[in-house]
Image (cartoon, rainbow over all chains, first blue to last red):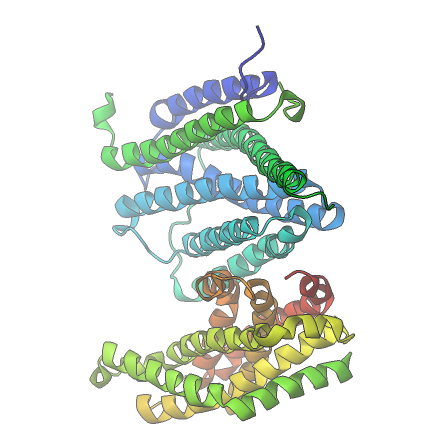
Length: 248
Length: 49
Length: 222
């Protein structure tokens, strides 16, 4: 009996299983075995989601920029699909980063938003991704594969440079206006907390990878279906022409 | 040392539940859409399974 | 390249001089925004004077969106884009020309806003060299990035709503740098402001360079 058509494969099943196992372990450490912070108490446990999602958000932008650059050189569909997949999954993780950062802020700072440089620049990153995805969708309406990608590819290429410039500017700006306070990532962190943080980064990276592969394959199928739709329309049109006239 | 002895337990719970729920829902959506589309596309185009 | 830039800039500015859109529509919009800020922020409590650097530059950003949209709308009328593509003009020159025309219009808008801010918000003008340098560098950056993203959004049906979300996050470093530099100058501590000018100059150079290199391929695409 043939396998049901799906975007899964032995590789993704392994990856998915590993991520879930890792997630279970992470939950144990994050919520139970690791100690509360001296200053932040248990709200530090939110950091074990917030920091990994922040890192993944940056990585996703990097992948989109790389994919856009490769598409501009090679114009192959795979790079086009990868750019969109990375941006969309990246958007999810960026949103998660913002929400967790805000939730963390409440017990720590007493406020849901404190113009911390990283949260501010991450919000701008969120909007940069939204803009890129919106531009890709507009391009998708106009059809022919090689042409429509150009605008989105340029925006995608500039995505990571923009993220870096914005991050640097906002950081510099806020460092002037904010008194020295608790930084979100204490370098002299306790051993078990550091381990949990590292574990969090690994687990969320695995989750990201799993989502990216599925989203990439989904995007690939969408391209095939779209192309198939075009081909079918062309075939139909030719059939009509043959029936209607002897010309052509 | 029960879970309820945790300070800010509501925030910690929300801080974990919301992102995991969002990731989970997104994952379901991608996989379901993937299945639907995979049925429409011939196997030669799906070179991964 | 520069000769072609001059041709394109001259064309755009002549269109403006004949149609007066910037002068008749964007200038009033600029003043209107200043008034709206005044209404929203209670003129009697001294916020406006202290916030004038930021309010000035936010208004400039909004006006820049209009100017950039306009710069590309004039191309899509009457198949101007195809004419540009076929004209044999150096694409880098077209980019620089369009950016220069936008910059000139922005400078005019900024002059109007400067008068408005001094008159309406009671801002005291100090640190003029820094102010002038900031205006030059920031306007160059706005025009360069704006021309690049403007052409990306041009010709799309949704450009009015898409250009702002594409461009404004990209311009946030300009807003930060220009506002900080202005605040340093207006607050009498001009020496603190010069590093921000550095940021503005780097931004402008990056986008001028990228736009010059990429415009050719972009113009094919529409």
